[in-house]
Length: 416
Image 1 (cartoon, rainbow, N blue to C red):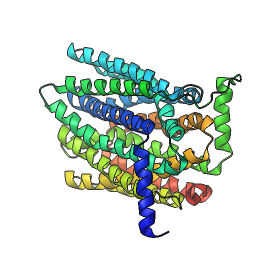
Image 2: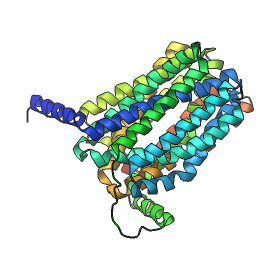
Image 3: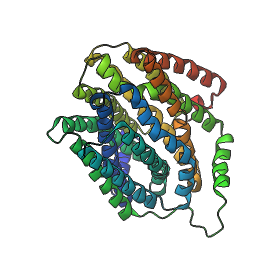
Image 4: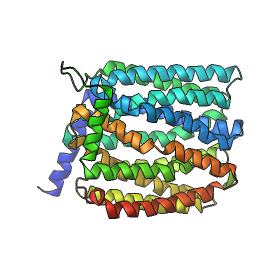
């Protein structure tokens, strides 16, 4: 086959992907939900850091949302295998809309406090535990295996686009006359649209058998057994766990603090930093979707992890806005280069009937120690350690851990 013919065939496959009604619905759901979360998370972070002036408490807000996600994620994965995944998305997004409406009422009446955001985070995180496994395991049900890499690329490109525009939109809304009422209200409307779209899509459950289902714990154990039997999955789980230990805490709660204390910036500067990272993710997602990489994916993943750690360290040593934007752009490039090949490999090699459980366990593993990372970051800040030093320490520790994983568990590096 000539190079021209190969490119032509890839173009036909991409076009056929966008002619599928179910995929277009999933894409629209992703657009609405991704933009709503991006705008809200930016607004919430800046509200805590700037309006409430409780930067050391920002980690508590994130922990409040992460703990219930971890506790219920495995249960959410089992339900995603037993129920219609679109029904789970519909119910969860509708309830998340109601929660945001409750925050709007508190904000309008002047009663929106740190405690309110913590309680909100607990309920929002619990609903996320059902959304993520359902959303992550839905795509293989409607897209052919040969199109999974491209489909995942489109979805991740959309998500990265929302991370570019979301913080910028959030910054503009906060700075507008509507202020936080708009920056919290717009996400509520978009989540409601996402719920309606999920209701209209209505994809049946993967497991439609009438046989008696095993108990909840037995179903979770079946997913764990799949992980234990695969050296690739074991290496993947360990890598994601330690990534969250050393990076997620400093990065999630550290960015607004870094902008405020190191760069002496404002909400718009914060949006530029987040937008730069999302721009890197967007560029990387598009390139990976075009290339449709199917060989030496493990080598690409491990290389991306090391590159991310190096640029994360360089970011921590930067003191000007433009240098920070450049380094965090390259950090953003590494995330899709790691995630898309891994997700596509998992989706194409695992039985669709247990996909929800596996995605739930994988998400739980990736987030399992995130609260510890957030708590450790908060404690270190409260004891006077600056955020740039915390970031640098996390990057260096993760480099060492990745070297150990490559040495002891080479399956991830050798994955095709």
